[in-house]
Image (cartoon, rainbow, N blue to C red):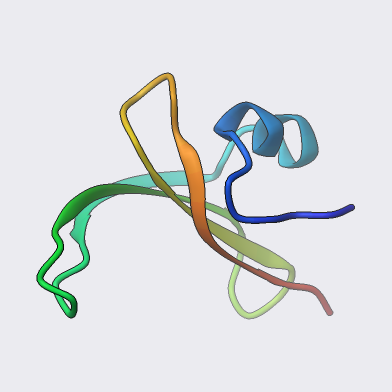
Amino acid sequence: MKIHSGMSSDEILILFGKPKSISLAVCGSKSNNLWNCTTWKYGDFPYDHAKFTFSGEHGSYILNDFKVDRD
């Protein structure tokens, strides 16, 4: 499985299925370049879990950042 920034949310859904939780926040405060970000979380910490942060609007999310931890 190859994950890379710029993947669409549809591609993440194909690889991981529906997320366990979804959150919306404002990102970019450190760079003063604010943007809305949506984060999908899978699994239970500290065991197998993943977190994907997207930019863009609903229906056209683009992967901006991700973290996947597997035991």
